[in-house]
Image (cartoon, rainbow, N blue to C red; front, side, top):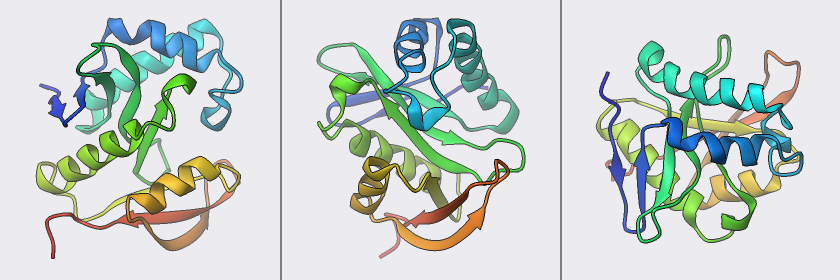
Length: 170
């Protein structure tokens, strides 16, 4: 499968590659940075997460992209779609801490949402987060996410589900 590259004004969303390993190591082994993403992980588990993020493209036809700042050429996080067995498909993202608050996650998420509706042809793009992840909830609301359900997930936690509007429907 050819994983697409997405372009925005400031970013390129690239297929995950070996070049992402250092960013995965920094993010997932940092307890505070990765606390909403099952972290901290061991270096071996961070590597396995990268391998999984690449492999899911081939198993499911979608996945996450590496977020690269165009001008600087550095990879600062990931954004795209995830669906574990028994879980709803979701928009997901993470950034290294020093790149938060710059609008990067919002810009990358808008590109991913657009791609899901326009290219994947999905009729719904949704996300969810733990109740205490206020930064994620704020971003979802900025992206126009609308709460449509609350359910218990396979890990036993209850979460709100949000749906994003299709930017191609008026």
